[in-house]
Amino acid sequence: MTAATAPSSRWAFLTLLGMLTFSPGGAHAGMSPEEVKKFEDYKAKAATGDASAQHMAGFCYALELGVKHDMLQAFNWYRKSADQGYAEGLHQVGLCYSKGWGVPKNEVEGYAFICLAAVTNDFARDNLASLEASISRAEVAAGQKRALELRKEIDAKIAAKKAGNQANPIKESKPPVVLARSEPPVAVSRASSYEEIKAAAEQGDMMAQFIMGDYYSLPVGDIVRDDDVGFSWYLKAARQGLLAAQVKVWSQYCTGLGTKRDYVEAYAWSVIAATGGDEVSRRASQQIYVNMLSRAQEEPARRRREQLSSEIAAEKEARKGRTGK
Image 1 (tube, rainbow, N blue to C red):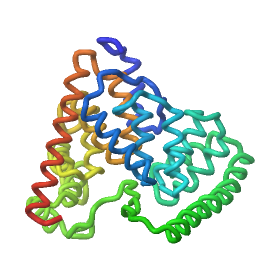
Image 2: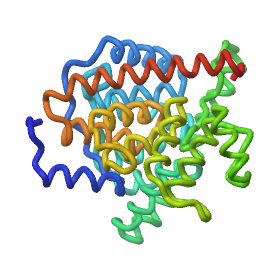
Image 3: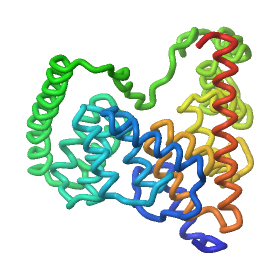
Image 4: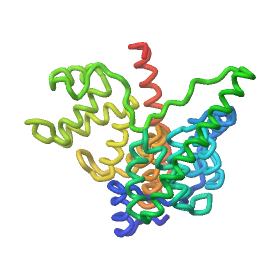
């Protein structure tokens, strides 16, 4: 990294907001004790067979969060997660094969894994379309055939594990939940009236706050567009932990839409969203760190990320105390 980023580098990063491209690397030293602790917790849980934790262990190795960058280790953990049918694990294995990250490049194998992930994962569907445009029809057909074989292989592994657990019962954690841009159940939906949504948002309903952000940012109906108001609603939802809102917040800090452009805030929020499982945010967090932050901003950005993480955790606990949820 340099103290000043060339305009071409900044432009290359801004295209990331509308593209799905990522290059591993750019790892940095100076990880915090909190990062190391979080990685160790993920890895310990991953070792018990938890598919979500296995995916997150791979994520940590890929982005050097609490552990040295190692794409071979990242791939191995992603594969363990994928072998349990976990969508994010399947997606990451597919990306590794299609890009040659930690494993020899094999676009047919990559296509097959991403095919399986795309059943439930929006980002995998996006990447599947991109991959289809870059490989031959014969390779697409081979990938589709391989996906069917792979589905059977994974189902067999899951069945064998289940049979083994029944023969040797042990206390298991709850099965992982695939979040893939999911949102928590709330009392309102986009079918509700504006007045109902606004009332719920003002009472602290995070999904209603997110919808209010859309009302002013898209805009919806006869509402006059106001990016500042839209951003303020997204930020309220993001601070309560809503993943979709956190993605909106970091992207708008990058572009300066509805708020002052601030790459320190963008980095902090992108890592928060990436930790929640958002694939684009995971890529963006590294690109922001490498291409957008000056050396003087690196440490403040890491501290801000830690501060936000603590604030969001505190808000979740406070909400749980108020609502029991």
